[in-house]
Image 1: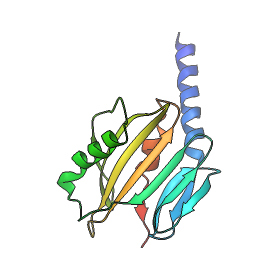
Image 2 (image 1 turned 90 degrees about the vertical axis):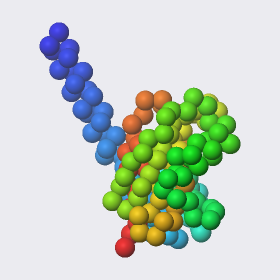
Image 3 (image 1 turned 45 degrees about the vertical axis):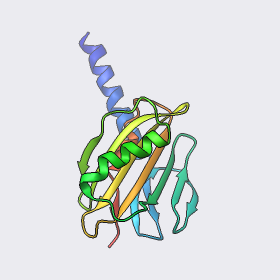
Image 4 (image 1 turned 30 degrees about the vertical axis):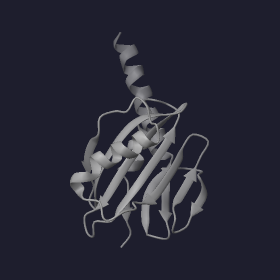
Length: 155
């Protein structure tokens, strides 16, 4: 029993290590926004309108939040609204988090036949915001949250 438990723990650690090693830097040049993305990605758009990259397993979209200046207190409800408008089903509860340069909220759900993580990030410095969508296939995949928590603004 102990041997089986050790083998399982070792396999899990190797799987986590392999996942962590598959990330590489990605930068939205128009706004200096960087994050860690799955290795081998293809950039589909790097313009002022958005930044889109993909791999066979992940499709990541980053856009500026439009509007009159969203407030931190509005992030959760606005994210819930956009997820509902996009017909995201089986939505998780909203999770609040904080990064060195951002306040954020995220939720997971089903986007048609895939899984998705939707997030809003609000900069601490000037209150501008980002919309981040990560579409992926495996429901228990921890990498989308890792990607989200790696966002920074280059100085």
